[in-house]
Length: 403
Image (cartoon, rainbow, N blue to C red; front, side, top):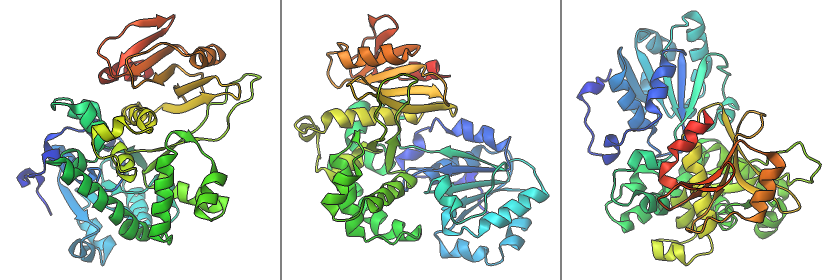
């Protein structure tokens, strides 16, 4: 058993407080099983150790990538029952999916809260493909890469976070070269080791080509036929590849909002690489000069801002985009379930925040409660009735509107 009060870490990420931590601690007082899901290397283990240090009871930590910890589970029922009075933390749970039925049985025998904290690098849907459902017993949290609010005390947090992305080892690297090298290693490891561990048998070279093609299409409407033709595979295959990258938190498919209007709507999702640092690495954008000279700069800013928002929205809020065939468009809509959108958001990389006709027309179509133009400036000022600018470092105000 580990006593986390004695653990210290030289990793600078230990000193960065994750906003989601208080919500996870609260969930542990309400559910027997709580899951922290997120991409590989996003900081789940560091966060779990921090939570263990604040937990009121005893904790046990098992890393299922380590042979020694796996051997402790040679007789899993016996081991878990021995520690039934502790919070049992199971890291990389997807590597031993046969534990799920046992966890379910143990929880059904004793529905106390705060019994298991499981960490995984796959979405709930992907986990359910190889495990018995814990529906009604588990609450899921998604840990995103670093957000502005978590690193805002650094010298140039916005540009650093945008360029390097929010993976802790990339963002906190001592030099730009170390950050780039980390991302190169991450991509290689993800394709060659992590994908097979999920049971995915797609050649690494094929998935790397697909991932790179997605980077060039970042922020665009999904076009399966175009990408399939470029790869020489079927539309069904590229759809499968896209779902894999989404289920492993590498890609976001932003779904269209279907307004109750007579207008013809775009029905395909927009696709974004979720981490801007990985996007820039795949496009060979290594510094701010490269970024300012690259046509990806606008879509990159848009996707990065969407991830900043998505990482901190309340659980009940959903995101979509709006685009009609006539050209009316809003980059991001925030709403609760199927309810009318309450916030419309447009993203501008420049300081010119004039409203476009396409945004005005879309705003009139769906009539959200309020609209924001998120930009890299410092001032907030009105642009029209219920529409105003919002500096990117003030996104917390948007989250308050979404509550």
